[in-house]
Structure formats: structure tokens, C-alpha cells
Length: 447
Ligand SMILES: NC(=O)c1ccc[n+]([C@@H]2O[C@H](COP(=O)([O-])OP(=O)(O)OC[C@H]3O[C@@H](n4cnc5c(N)ncnc54)[C@H](O)[C@@H]3O)[C@@H](O)[C@H]2O)c1
Image 1 (cartoon, rainbow, N blue to C red):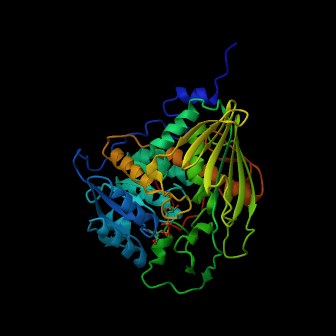
Image 2: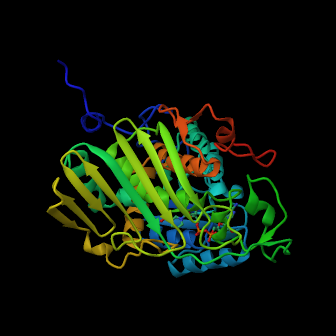
Image 3: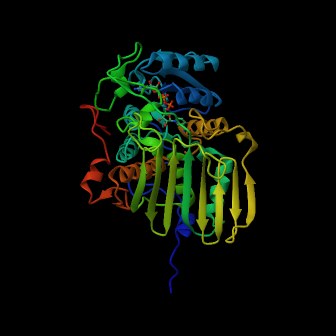
């Protein structure tokens, strides 16, 4: 009788295991239609969004040889000044620019680095791709489950490199551990579990507040339908609104979800269920502060726990992953990788590269500079055509889609059936209405 091929065996045989059905597998080493970079040419960068993560990305890209930062863009003056200061500290003299769209021209720049809020990620990525400019998009690649497909289509149509901010992919330690899991260190994995915990304070948003001087509120809102200014959202706390953010799930979840999908080679989910709520404070947050999400694909269950307002660690860590397989189990965290036999006895312990020392999984600007620097290097190598991307937008989209559909299951309070070919929701009109978003007129993504 012919032996049934396992997911792991399939993974080992497939050259690009997670490419999915939306696009083909020709994602690596895209050559931009823009300037052809020679081995010694400097990569000219512009930044969109430089408050917290963006300023950190100025620092990490400055560790790459032969880059130049020509434009620092942000519609908010305070953040713009911060980004300019960081660029100057790293030896660059960029132009302070309010609107990144004015510099999207391959004659001016080779790549745009996007660390604006989530509602801008796909929109900025698509605009850059259409202009023929390579783009690095922070995670999640999308504000909602539908958007990632636009980003992938834009990348394929316009032949630009699209990097994704899942920095663990570029770290040799994670590459080694994941490879061990893919090669059967614990047999076939049937359960993967990830988590993120933090102790975030209550937030108060001020409806009807005056727009602060130095903020272009219209540009900040970009693709999102216009509303009068709301005080308290512009830095970071937009994460907790559905209009601009996508909750803790798509904020911190993409890192561990990406590891779990990478290790298991899971396809799009076939089913998702989630429970949760805003239990700790009754404040301005629209999204839950505590959730449990579960997805199912053939032979595999994936679980993610998010606890935003109770810092009690799990396994002594604010974030991490566990894997359970037919021949044992394994725990993979930013600092260590432990493998256990079926009885739970530790049989192999691998420590992360010492250069990860000092990493902090709850740092909101960067959980680890060493990881960021390696990832910036990989993106620049890909732009030069010297290396493939360690993580593709297809993988970034899939990780985001898992979490966005988890959010939809929590919001509707229902188990959702999904099309395993692409993660689309089947037969539930209310849930389907939350799969994409309404755009400000004229801002609908055009690939
Ligand atoms: N990979 C990681 O480890 C990591 C870590 C932190 C944050 N992030 C991601 O980075 C993004 C930014 O996070 P943050 O904490 O810096 O948020 P933030 O709110 O502090 O900063 C976002 C900045 O983007 C600016 N902005 C808004 N519209 C813009 C536009 N049209 N053009 C240019 N800039 C615009 C805002 O004015 C603000 O200064 C988020 O999507 C987050 O998920 C990733």
C-alpha cells in the first residue's frame, strides 16, 4: 500500500513550502524595475513612520554597509524630529519630508522602509511597488485579512522586493532550531502553541480633542475613512482600535505565529475559533485585552494566547512557542531551544547566540537589536540581488491572516470555516464583512 505522505515529508520535498496558491513560487531574488544596483552602489532609503520602530529601523539599517538615508517622512512633527535626530546620530543627512508619496520614485530612492501604523502597511507597500520602489513593510503586513493579497499582487506585477518585519527569520539560531523541527526532531508536529503577555496600562482616548500643532491628521489617516481627531491614539495606542490597528493578536502575534507556521509548514487554516474580552480595565480600548485563539489544519492545531494586561509570564517568558509531535516536544524562545522525549525528559538544549543577550520581548521598539540588524542586512542583500529574502510577503500574509481571522472569530463569537486554499471565510456573512475594510474614497488599494 502506498504510504501517506506527512506534512513534514512534504515540507522537506518542497523547495518553497509555504508559497500557497495565491502566487507562484518565484518570490525570491526579484529584480526591481528601478535602478539596477551594482555590488558597490549605495542603497538609497526613505522612511515612512519614524516615531518608535521607525527610528529603531534607522539604527538597524545603519549597521548595513553602503546604505544612505535620504528621506525621513512622517506627518507628525515630533516624530519627524526624532527620526531626523536618529539619522544624524548615525551619520546621515536626510531631508525631513511630511509625505512619503512625494519621494516614491526609483530615480530618487531604491527602497522605502514602512513603520507607520498598521492601516498604512499594505497601502504604502502597494504605492511603493506601483512606483517601482522596493519596500520593507513592518509586521503585520496588513491591517485586515484581505489586504495581504493586494501586497503580493503588487509585488508580482511590479517586480519589486517586498521585505517583511519578521526579524527572527534572519537569525542563524532560529534558522537552526526551525530546521531541526522541520527535519523531525520531535516527529510530526500536531500541536503548536504561542503566547505573548504584557502589563499594559489603561488608555483614555479623547474624542473632540483639537488636532495638535505639527500633525497632518488627514495624511495620518490615509486609507482609513476620515473621523474627527481623537486624542491619545496617534502614538502606539491606535493598535487597540479596529479602525487603525488589529489588537494584540496582529500586533505581537505575528512573531510567534510566523515561527509556528515556519516550523510546521502549515497551510492556510481550515477552521478558527476564539474567545476573549476586555476584562482588566473598562477603558477606551475597542479590542480584547485577553484572548485564546485556536486554528485547525489537517493533522495540526495551532493555539495563541494573548494577555495584554497581566504580565504574569508563561514559562518565565513574555513570549514563546511550544511544539508537540509524535516523537516528543520542544520549546523555542528568543533565548533557548529545548527538546524533550515523549515522557518529557530533556534530551537536547540549545542556547541562543550570545549576541541576543539583553533582548527584551516586551520592548515596544525592538525586542532585540541583533535580530533587527541581521534582518536589515538580509533585505539590503535581497535588494542588491545577492540573496533571497528570509521571509516572503506570502509568509507574512499567511501569519497575519491567521491572526486577523482569530480576531474575527473573537468579535463574532463564532467558530469560522475557512477555505484552506486561501484562508477566506466560508458561509458567514457577518464574519465575511470583517475580512476586509472600508476605505476612504479614492484610497482603495489599486495594484
Ligand atoms: N518587528 C518588530 O519587532 C516591531 C516592533 C515594534 C513595532 N513594529 C511595527 O512598527 C509599526 C510602527 O510601530 P510604532 O510603535 O513605531 O508606532 P507609533 O505609533 O509610535 O509610530 C508610527 C509613526 O508613523 C507615523 N505615520 C502615520 N501615518 C504616516 C504616513 N502616512 N507616513 C509616514 N509616517 C506615518 C506616525 O505619525 C507615527 O510617528 C507598527 O505597525 C508595529 O506593528 C514592529
